[in-house]
Image 1: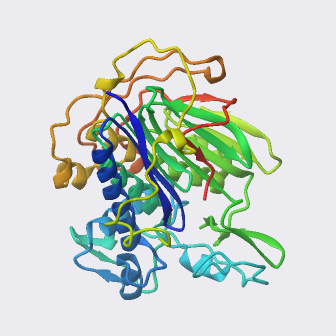
Image 2 (image 1 turned 30 degrees about the horizontal axis):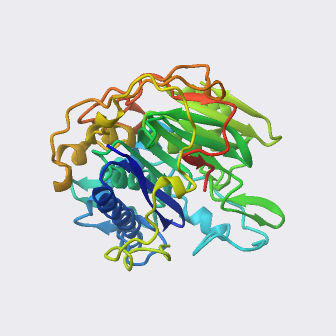
Length: 291
Length: 133
């Protein structure tokens, strides 16, 4: 059986996406890619905070989603899981800080000037937000940003359509799931790019994500600002690391742990599962590998 | 957000479907192959669910397109890595969990028993780049 790599590429969730499937049946592979691409778009339609018609935007406006769509419900559940696991450092309530720093409809194109002093996000019990199996209810004034969790889940939902082929790869903005092999029967390889290529992961079962303060970044009164908010300060984090790439058992974990490393720094290693592997680059440009 | 694509393209022929040989993400590397069984190996739905962290409702109630029998673990073709790909740890075949629980994210059952191989060296062409966004 002759294998070929069929692929689709485009923009989704505000970033580049590449979906590939290694298959012996091009037509079947193409059909699977169409379904996968449609699924990614459906995730964006449900979970984008920038789309007024999205399930998430409606929840943020009204405070209630009932019945909550499956994608929204799952994303809220996972975000709460992540919040609790990280002791509050991965907080979905970061829209207000982001907007205070000028990140509203899109990344600010220039310096946003002086920003009002930020406030820490008060720890809360989020479990009560899911009141019934299909109802989400937010406290007054609370809005959620589910970008990271939503992207990871979206990758997973899209990848499900590409099962039953020899190999698949889903790359959304550098968060990558790769399973099986390429068309030559070789394990997939994922380059780790921290400004420049610093290494690569290879294998037949890869979930790799990178978090950085260098992308989706701008300035506020000349100071560095970016999209990764530290809930302890309510401001963009300014830690020791500028890049963290994590390979983990799942893409959800890879995405969340990478973000946590950038926010918390090397101290986040204490939370590591022994199956995680991280490639870190600090502000001085020094790269190290943690296992 | 989806300027180039859906829904306009979803029902139209996808002009950008190409074989990987002409795509930037196609792998070109050569390695000595030990196994010739790769044609028989497919990625299972369970493997996808495990590595993407999708469990709970989705795994218990897979959508219609995902209901085919899917109980075998993904096999991997044993290959001998080239020197440039040698890494300090070896990669183990991935055991499959068909129905991973919806426990807190970091507690989900593994799809990997060991971390993937990492090499500080790389080749110019690779399947993907993890770079942040």
